[in-house]
Amino acid sequence: MFKFFSNKTYQVFSGFQLEKPDCFIPWNVTQEGLVKLFANHKHDIKIVTNGYYTIECTSLNGLIHRLGFHFQPRESDYLKMLEFFRSSYPDLNESFKEFQQHFENSFGPPTKSFPRNSEGYPSYEWNLGKWRQQITIRHYVFDRFELEELCISKENDMRSHLFR
Image (cartoon, rainbow, N blue to C red; front, top):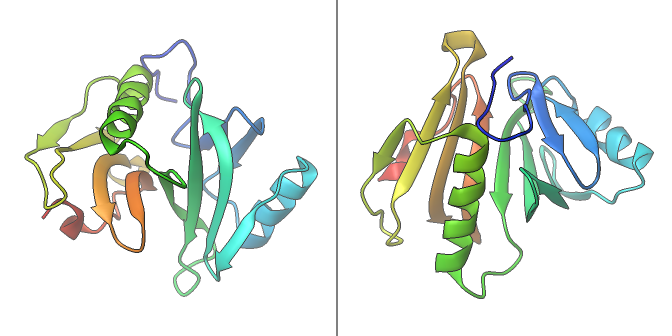
């Protein structure tokens, strides 16, 4: 287990703790298991497409956001990445600062930082653990289908193009 900088210890190597709803999402959860987990907590989960689900939640000591759950059904049926974003961004600068503050308070200073990307924002990365137990956290602004801000992935399997 990794001791984080916040008052709370997050067991990020095993999964991710939500505050509202109060539930723990293990990395080895399947798509079916995720749906059942939220049904047990009486919390709606939106099925966007096969392998991708979203919810409105609170985590990391009060950060309110949407959370996307990415599975790679062709490779395995287990959770691969958590994506943090908002439904709307009235002030993207303030949102970026708020996400960064919550992540630094929870995980400490970033391991790496990158210059401004094409969206005009710097990017930050935390690398926790080693090789097979590695967790990579990236904070960036990326406009794909809608703005995304942050992701946590297991085993450092993120696409490198996010920082171009």
